[in-house]
View 1 (cartoon, rainbow, N blue to C red):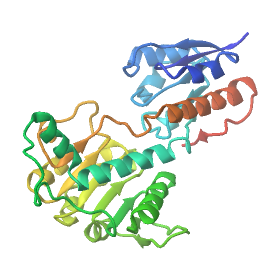
View 2: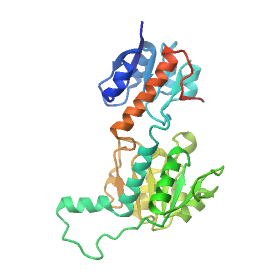
View 3: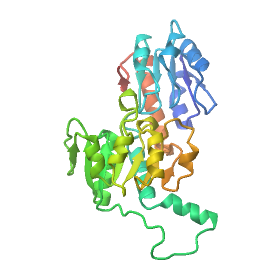
View 4: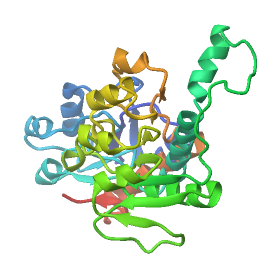
Length: 321
C-alpha cells in the first residue's frame, strides 16, 4: 500500500508526475496557507506532508496531535522558520528543505531589486503608466549608478555568495559582508564583524540571512541610521529580519535613498505607509518564481519524501534542531 502524502498547495505538474508513482497523493487546491485545523489533520491523517511558506507548524500544532501518523515534513523551500523543528523532532517528525534549488533565482531577484531601486525603475514605470511623463530631459529621475559601488551582504551563505558573484563579476562592485567567520572566496571581499560598520561603509545593503528568532529585527533603527543617505536596502530573506516600522521611518525621512523588498514582516499585509512611498520597490515575494526553479524545488522535496518514506533512508536534505 502506498504512503499517503499531502501537498499543501498546487504545484507544477512535473512535480506531481514525479510523486504519483510513489504515493497516494492528495493535492490541496487552496493557495492560502494551511489553517491550524488543516495542519493538525495533516499530521494525523497523512504519512508525509509537503508544506509551503506560511504553513505555521508551531509547537501548539504538534501539541494538538497526540500521536502523529506523519513522519516527515518535506518543506517546499529552503527557509523553514515557519516550522518548529524542535517540536517536530520531539513528535517524531523529520523536517527537510530544498537548498541549492533556489540559489540563483533568489540572487537574480536581489539584482532586480538593486537595479530597480538604484535606478528608480518602479517610480519611472508608475510615471509612464499614469500619463505624467512629459519626455526625456537631462536631469529627469537621476538615480545611482551601480557599477563600481560597494555592496554589503548580510548572510554570506549560498544565496549571499551568488549575489556577491553577480555584483563583482557583473557590475565590478566592491564586495563586503557581515560574518563571524570569513569565507574563502574566489573574488576580493572585505569581512566585517560589526554590522553597523558594514552598514556605514556600503552603497547597497543586501539582506540574505535565514529567518528565525536569531535574526528577528536584525536590521533595526540603529543599523538603518548607520547607512549612508545615498544608500539602498534590499531584502530577499525573510520580512521580519527588517524592522518594517523603522524602515518606513527611514524612507519617509530620506535617511536612506531607497529600498527594494521582496518580503514583508507581516506578509501578505503590506503597510499603506510603505505602499505610499515612491522610494521603495515592492515585489510580491517573487524570489523563486520561475517555472524551472519551482519544479526543481518540488522535485527535491519529492526526493526527500521518497528517501524517507519509500526507501527508509535518511532524507538527503534533512534539517536538525
